[in-house]
Amino acid sequence: FYGPKIDIKVFDALRRKHQCATVQLDFQLPIRFKLRYTAKAKDGEGDNFERPVIIHRAMLGSIERFTAILTEHYGGKWPFWISPRQAMIVPVAAAFNAYGESLRERLHLLGFAVALDDSSKTLNKKLLLARKEQYNFVLIVGETEEQNNSVNIRTRKNTRVGEVSVEDLIERFNKYRDEKLADDIVDPDQDDSDAKAAFKAKQEAKKAELKAKQKAAAEEKRKKREEERRARELQKEEAQN
Image 1 (cartoon, rainbow, N blue to C red):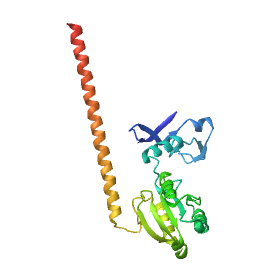
Image 2: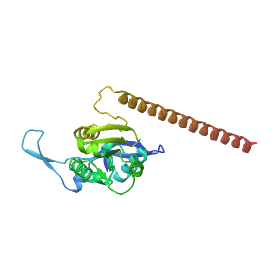
Image 3: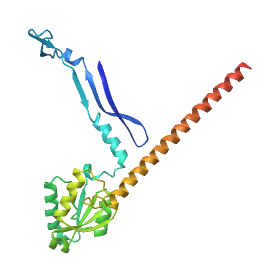
Image 4: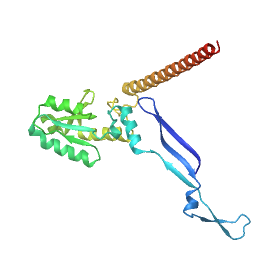
């Protein structure tokens, strides 16, 4: 039913192959729907009706399968640009809940997934829960932050970035989201920062490790096939004798 097509396949965490995106030509549906368009006749006299070709373009394939593969790939630690839990605002005391709520509302209106923990838990408990719930950033607010219109940032890995203004925070969040930067890059404004270099080296190391694993798995598979072949030959020789 379909003509030539392009399939894009990805691997999940267990190295299983899944088809996701696909682009293919469909010659049947235009016939069944009786689709046609007017085209100039080849001889130049009058117009003819021609049959179109439908192009199927599914960039995600099954959205459920695509989401499952992404979840396995990131291990639940979603990067900022697709994370459903981008930041948690943690006031150090109830007196600063109002400032925290105003900040949450402002970031929410800008399209960021931000929550506010205004519970009566201790500060350490709030920070621990935010990290366990995989928020990309924890924004701590207290008296100093309220006076300076700022926040104190901690990352998911409990790295202390320090105090930054709300305007700077919004600019950083926009960069993380729009440029799809990794959370390992603490300061996205540094063009040639050590963090970017370290991140690139980390990615290259992951690729090298993955390539080595694939090579080892292929070699193991080859050895297994060779052993099975030898076993079959021995069985055949014993049967002949």
